Length: 362
Image (cartoon, rainbow, N blue to C red):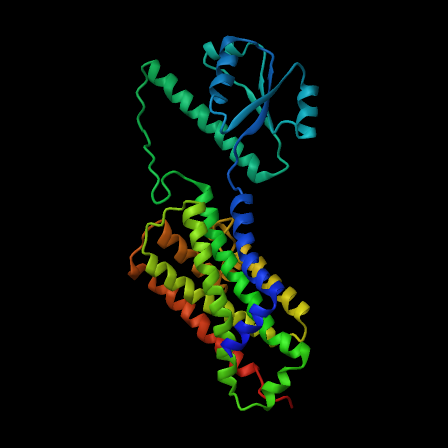
């Protein structure tokens, strides 16, 4: 069965290219295209005070162009409003008249207008400015001899540089391995239904378990080849430092491929055309894998309904395993629970395949 499927795949050049290029392109597109960090924010300045202090604040805030870039200086609030409305800038620093004088009296205030079209981006921009102001206030307090009763020294563990590209690349690996093997395996049985060659299986001597295992191993073999390509991209192209064991990483990835392939075979039991199977598999893998696995937002921040949904999706457990191995070098004892859960998913899905697939039509 495995040899037959692989020979058919090698003969069908379009399918071969699709099977190999789709996971690769997804890894590259998502890895490079999905940016969760907010950087190079274009801002404008509306300075009614035109003092040394207002210029100093603008200079310090934009000294690191990685976060803020001054695009325009405005002379009226109407100009600033048009610039935000048109998307030319995402925020405007507004310094009122007598800002420096109020500052010397201990009551210096300025305004920062932020484009709230995208709430997440607006909150991140706000946090950048608040962090800058808090740091400047601490420096001023120390210069004036005020003792600070509490100081916080922050240290980041695991992803010490807070490199969001690493997190996106690792998450993309989980999403790709959830989608590609499922889609490929979903078409293995459906194409025989569509062409009518499934009747050869019905009347042949091959057993139901042998047939399903053959399809499973066919999808697994192709996906295993893709896995090593994707891991190479993760390490050498995205330069993600893998702190944990590569052997454990490959083991849990192989296990997850089996789960994903079994899910694809299960989908094929409900469809009779390749188009329907393809669309159904994409919908049932892409949306859950992106929304409910911690790929974009932390699962812990979801409501109870979404949290329950996340725990019903195998990709959620594989995502946790990936991050624990790659970033935390977690010992095997901390990985057993999620690994056993993936094993249970595989046994359950393959058992359902065995129950639903009928050797002969009634």
